[in-house]
Image (cartoon, rainbow, N blue to C red; front, top):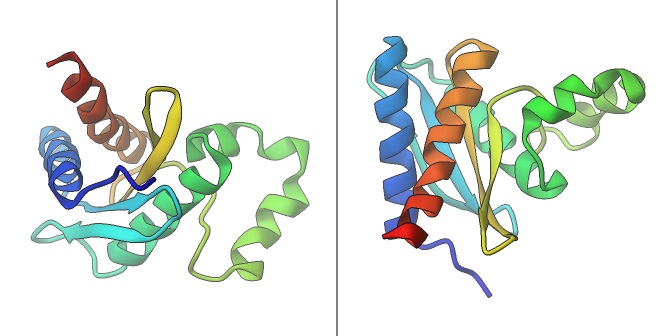
Length: 140
């Protein structure tokens, strides 16, 4: 059952872009559904052209692994060769660097958000801000 709607993706992207403005950094934001299909991709004015690709790949990675890409980076030393090879095995589809977060509703991954354009911490914080939209929707 696909629960990631365009309307929800728009709210998620809006929250992530709002967070990026607090850093003063234009970023690219992508939201994918639970199968890794792109629902919405957006690039702020002034963000680099490659942020479309990096944000989509980070969102897909978060969905595939059902965890933040920051966690993957933090645990990279467990199997460094695997993480180093992954982007070349699945080119353009996976990017195990900070900035991707799964979007979870009722304990299930319903999609992922990916951010590109800032430093690793900024990308992660913006992805978290976008993912929290689902939590706020449930509480409303």
